[in-house]
Length: 163
Image 1 (spheres, one colour):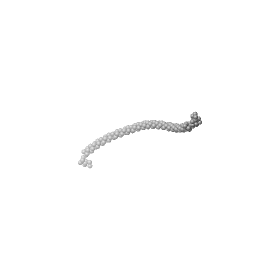
Image 2: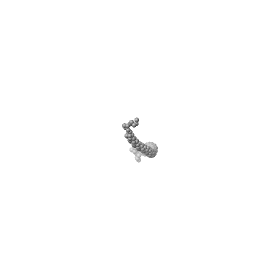
Image 3: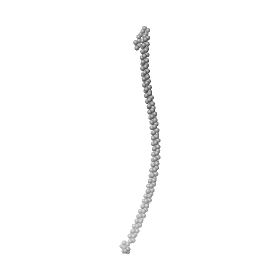
Image 4: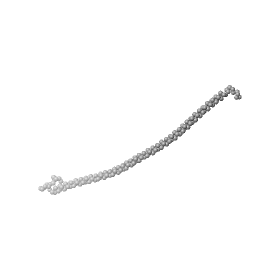
C-alpha cells in the first residue's frame, strides 16, 4: 500500500487504512532489516572464515619463518665452523710446510756437505795423480838418461870382448 492509496474520511485518513499502511511499512522495514541482518551475518561468517584462514596462514608462515631462521642460524654456524676449520687447516699446512722446508734445508745442507767432502777428496786425488805423474815423468826422464848413458857407454863396434 502506498500513501496515495489510503482512503480519506471526513476528519482525515481512515484509521484502519493508516494502521494497515503503518503495519505494511513496519513489515517491509522488518523484512529489509532481516535481510540486512542475514547479509551482515553472512558477511560476518565470511569475515570470520577469512580471519580463520588468515590466522592459519599466519601460523604457517610464522612456523616457516622459524624454520628458516633456524636454518639460517645453522648455516651461519656451518660457515663459522668452516672458517675455523679452514684457518686450522691453513695453520696445519703452514706448520707442515715449515717442517718440510726445514727437512729440505737440512737434507740440502747434508748433501752440500757430502759434495764438499767429495770435492775435497777429488782435489786430493787430483793432487795425488799430478804428483804421481810428476814422479813418473821424473823417473821416466831419469831412466831415459840412464838409457842414454848406457847406450853411450856401450861399445857398439867392439862386441868381441863379450864372446
